[in-house]
Length: 421
Image (cartoon, rainbow, N blue to C red; front, side, top):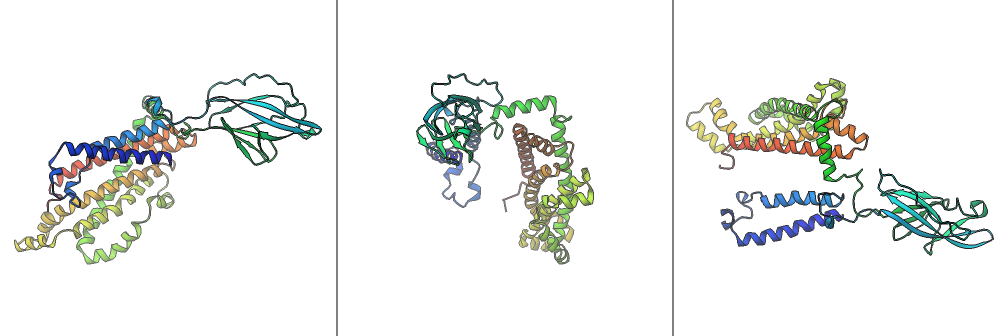
């Protein structure tokens, strides 16, 4: 919630600052339009907003992971590190209550640490010391070195002067001190607002891991082989799905019989997530490459069929009448009217289908794949290598974004009449 609130605050502040600056300087003729709300042509991506959005995400990522690439004054409060102390009050049969101090050295997990040396003190309750890793908690048996142990009725009744009982806890300056049902103390140092690296590593850790895998490979394959196999599966599955789905969509848009025959099938399969088909595909085609291609083919097929059908249905009837009045044949109408006017919808469907295929390939590679980005993420997750998982997710997103940009460029080059009536 804290991260979300900061993100919203940055968004609102950036919006008003950029709008204020934009009023002072006119950057294009769009701002001179008398009507912009509701005019799709007046809505273009703000490059400034895009840059600020990306920088904000990386800033928040670095701030809440203690990243070295983010200035220290922007870091969110981190976990407590150092020597923490608290005092406990103990009672024993026939003895007056006595106080002792516990010193806990909180260390960064993965580093060497020594138990702090302390003086035992003069009372029957002796001072104690122990170690606990940051973001962790640890049981502390304070009665082990006291003169009167549990066999003499030893029990802790207060922490820093605040009463405590089994199942309760006391918040101290350095962290929370709880008591188990059996009366053993449990110390949990303050975690701060930063994420533990095992859950979310800093950006530089992900970059270092990328360089390591790019040079040394992962699981006996190079990074480029993993990404290449994923890309190959997606492209092949998408192309086969488009090759079948587009003619099917055209047939459904032009023929009552085809529409009636295939419409129930398409509408039934459209909402079924491709992941739900994995068990069936494995039964039918096994766990090899064929099964993965079939799954991606099914992910793209229904989207492309609906996109082509929508493109045909969206052709203005006035254009068809005009072509007939000029003596055009059905093939000429198909070639010069229906196909050109349906291409914008087909390209839109292709972009959606490619995105779905990219999302599906990860799940497809979770099943007995030896190479692929999904396999790399799956294996890394088993060993809690979060930096590899995040690296794989980012690479999949970057490649998917790049493919989408290429398809947009192809659409602008092949369908220059889109949006022009």
